[in-house]
Length: 473
Image (tube, rainbow, N blue to C red; front, side, top):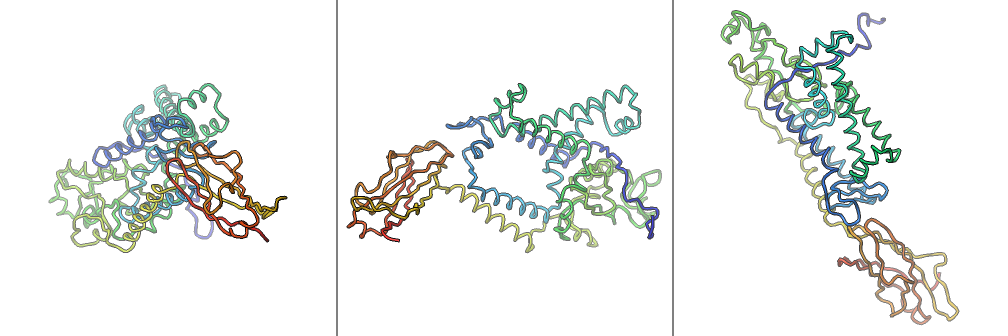
């Protein structure tokens, strides 16, 4: 090393983090979110939903049909604006929550957190509590106990990763049919490639990389600190209460009561290290706010457990703001939402969500476009009459097969010629192009400059589109 860098390493070997299990309200909330998230993800492809022109599946991403089926909503490629707005709403909501409660999304709702929690639960199920898992890591692979317990753990991880990837694929087709095709070797190549890629990614993210995803890979973890305010609620260690003037110390003889500890200048932290042992990212919350902290609250549960055993009040480690902790006597913990930034995020969320819901609820049942054929602009026939031609494109967005009637307003009877199309039947999500022509005798052609196409849907929707009739260039 040179330039004063001696003794510093540019790379450090990863020390695997082996979290200890803990009980408490934050752990119960995380578990509830885990089971709810897994239930939604793994069960949605199997829930039935009545459809007339597609498999009876509540959610299906029909790529060949170029549509997304979500309950009664059918989303087509031309609805890309909805997706853009939905992503923008999700981003603003994430900023809104970060300003209020820090990285709580990471600690409770992130896919990485949910699947890592599930992998850790399987690890605990087959290998035991933290001391047993640490002992197994030190034993050689020649140990039968290690071979069996660790082997079974990794097999179950692989099975969960496979089922995660397979479920993702089932969203893109009829679940029962596609599941059979996958196991019979009859599914498209894209299905097997997707299962392989997502399965390996899930195993690596939740079983191998774990906290490295939060600390080094996830972009949100790198810029979220810029959105923190002094009033933002996140997990903090009350240093003044925990350290006192002489620092933290174990609760040994003569230091088991708050009075004895205060007389010697020590705080309430008994230096048990349990807050570090339960942390899924391996940080010590007593070192202060850190960018890798995902605000999961497990250290709060751990510390409160020790406080209960000592007979002391909760809150040595708690959700709080820097502003409140800096006061001589911290007040009650509360969410600070009365700031310009938070109110701006909140108003933006309400307005964008309202517009998205309104736009979805008031979407036309069909789309149309009418283009005049300009090569040539008009044709003079042998009898002297003049003909203009038009191309009408109809796209059915109603969710079911529909019938459309096309008329012309402002023209004499018989002037509009639609060929064989007196009515047009279109399947849901499909488009049809109708060739129309308007023919007028010379006298009427000089009198008609504009007219209107009227398109009526069977369900009652009507659109009126103006058109021009040309008799000269």
